[in-house]
Image (tube, rainbow, N blue to C red; front, side, top):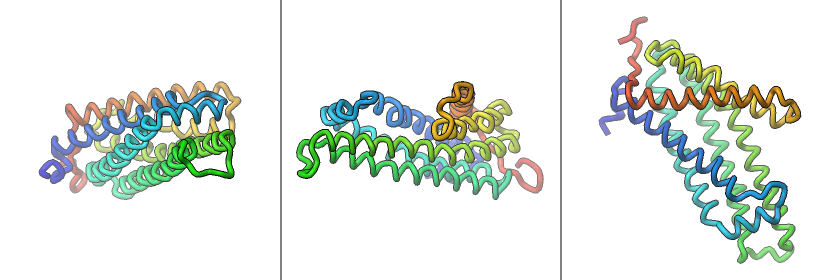
Length: 240
């Protein structure tokens, strides 16, 4: 495909922007919308009953996760190709961090498969009654959700480094480059808040503000790639 041949070309940037937006749409569906539809707060039995009634929705969420991860792998390699001339070690580290994030996401699919098996009416769990199966499914959901707090740490590293590379390039608007680096801290802060300091209201407020900055910067970056983006290769100290 010709779009992949030149990382400094407009078609390359447009494809990267399209993948970024696809990731955003798939992520909102699988990470936010689907769990909201299939969770009864504080009620394992009610949650299991919802999933048993709508197993196709949970499966659709898993499918969206798979689409998201494929797009993540493609985008990660493309971002590395676009920015490596502005710091090969930084660009490679950014790519490695984002790929580790994808690996954690892939591992998170295993608990979801277990949840589907536990809530299935045909599941041959003769040693577990319905309530026990619901509680075990709830534990698997908690394990899955904890995975989000893990991959956010690696995504923070990726956004820090991507922000630095984008700033160095002088091709990406400085507001977006700074927003990626600064707002990306929100993902790490969210994990710290949830794991260690859930009672700190001030930290929660800071997390919300930082994540808003990150979301705006990422959306803006994706739109910039789609509409105007082009990262020129740096050669001999000059932008080619």
